[in-house]
Image (tube, rainbow, N blue to C red):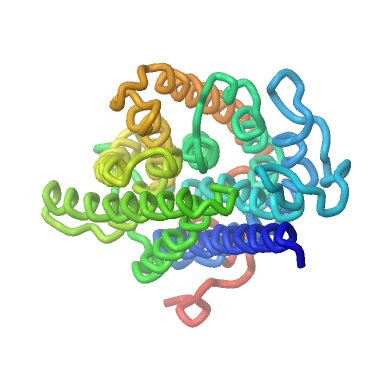
Length: 415
């Protein structure tokens, strides 16, 4: 084997490991969402996550990749590469050395499915399964790929100087905005708000152990999500990314736990979990360009922001059972803006001026507008067709039996 062939093989191995780590995150989402919702909807949550990764990869293969990375029209979307056609087998793409198109697609497809699955938790316990499948298809085939075309695909947002290393906006805010629109159009779960006072009521999830398992699987997978995004065998860059990722996630979880103890008198375990995820979302945009200290700071900020945001979202009568809008949408914005402030070379805090921060703001606004409008049309059409929300009886009795014909916990059925 020549040195060049060996280098390519090692690069593919690195990307394979990163791809597998991001894939594992989908198990984390499934466990987290199942734990934070009621047992009568456990199978439904698992089914949605299984369909997201399954049909999402197919939709991204058929349409999404081409829109995101094909030859662009006016910096808006691609027009070539549907079903990965037009490439030579194992054609080398991207980077100084390049790597086969096949492994590049596999890694990118995991990100597309991640953006879609963020929606799943926010619309849990009252959305028809078929409607969610339609949402997963459109998210991975159109909505997310267009965002990707504007940014990672070299489109108009990228030309502004916008920077998002691994997807605080591109993946997480995209999913968060779609989740916000979906939860708003669906309306809250039965019993979520007091009919007299209008105040939000707690609807506890059924398994805190599943919440912890899901969170730790997500934390584990995030090292591939961010570490793999270096897309090169650069030991220095990968080392920094892994360190900043770990510090931000840890700081987010610790801060959220301490904040809930100080503000409410109790250590909120679910909020610790969301704090970890918030810290990870917060560092994702700048994991390779901020210092370890700045990673720690953004994790602390994210840990506070997510607690405040969850309460605020509840307060405006948007029912998000898992806090996805706050974790991914709100903190995705925070993390993207943090790059404009804390980038070690170009950030406002370090003498780089406001140009990068302005580019970040414009990028956030543009992406949010596209996702809000496109997902609004999607959810609006499903609602107009009568295909969006389950009946009151189905919601009360649980989606597992009505949508899937079998309870997630058959030994507990009827108790």
